[in-house]
Image (tube, rainbow, N blue to C red; front, side, top):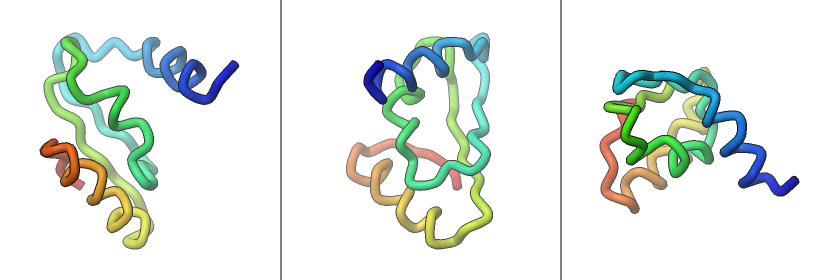
Length: 70
């Protein structure tokens, strides 16, 4: 199974019901493309203990024009 297929399989198990998602240990934000724009996700927030990872994560939403509070 490819990494993309595995991420989709795991994230498809979420049931946010149109609500917010908090990704804990968001790291560089590799799950963001699979969460942003889903009809059942209204907002995505990210949390990480590492300031370095949060800095890395900022670049993805900025490039895409997404608002993701970190």
